[in-house]
Length: 271
Image 1 (cartoon, rainbow, N blue to C red):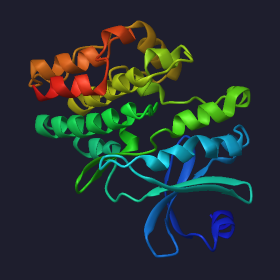
Image 2: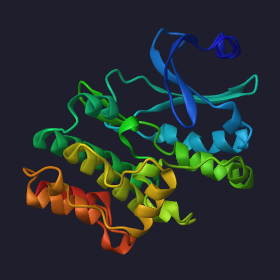
Image 3: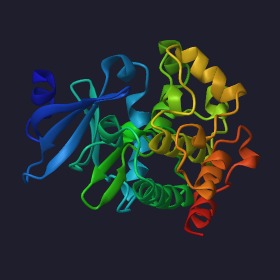
């Protein structure tokens, strides 16, 4: 942390580390006006596997996103070999932290989370932005509703890494929530991948476990690609059948068989 404080002094006052993900360390910091922000610094091994200028150029358009259920990008740059980006700070537990406490969410809470996250995905997808890493760790349960973090960051990493990223062994996405096309390494990842990942998240909200579970990551990836997920009702008898069907369709292996847009899935949820 001293290196981060030294590199960004004058721009940000770094308070403490608050999280560590697959791509970055996250610090609570304050800008020159004292506003709290989430300062995210790419891990060194990842920073050397991407082209910093291209990464920063790729994420620059994310500053145009304005939606109540999406964390805003407020700054980005490179300083003393540190590649960083700054997002609005959203206080509250992550969906992962909440599920660790309650295991299974109530039906109304699951519906509220589904509705708000679909609203966020609909907005971003219509702007041509795909998240690529929808998971409970990237959802903060704020006082005003769930907020999706790191929109577009995974794509920026993938686009700026190219061959160097492949050689580093970094995977864009998280195995538990990866769509089959992500597992197979398809180059044409589109918004339907986010629909699948959200289906995995909603399945876990109700069932208390992900659709595919194994201590071996390679088996999870294989199951996403080859095995049909169990029904939510195997783990949650009171799950309403329409909601079970909604999630099941989101988890279809073939993209053409899923909900084709977040808007379509959202409309089905409302009805």
